[in-house]
Length: 249
Image (cartoon, rainbow, N blue to C red; front, side, top):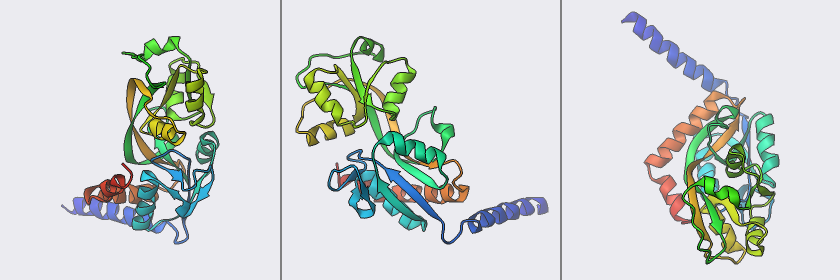
């Protein structure tokens, strides 16, 4: 019995010590990109800060940090490739909305999921093309967004892609016949297309379901990760996350 009590006390002391190690002036630098409806600039530009960044996951993250009592700065920048590499390399930085994949798992510490989504191949409006497997897409020219989870996955499968630095560019490429298929995320792709004045893109194949997370640099203190994950779980239980989603979808 005494041994059990000592073990419990040690665990409690360890937790208290870990929390104490988080300095009062601790601050996380958060980065994101235009990835509507999950995170986007209010003026649709490729740079925004703080309250000029909105969207489903931006609002969730903002409330998450407020409840967890952790200070942060929030910046939306372009391109994804640059901010992804920055968070990989620099301590106390985080990135969302980052798709969780087995390949990425050891590269970050993770908080989430913030939201769920799917990967799709889209064709121009009215296209009769339908595929039953990803393998069938190899005979087509596929456009994607450079270094995001979709393009990384396809490239790992040996696909040669026409990558763009802005996912919106693929809408124009698709309509001009420069690519046959657009590999993107649902509902992000259709949302971006509507912003470009294009609707009715045909879903040729849905080939993966994915979850979006807040990815933190590996040197982020475990106390930060624990506090954020616990708070996010509470937000899901009390209906706060669902309420935020309903504001956009």
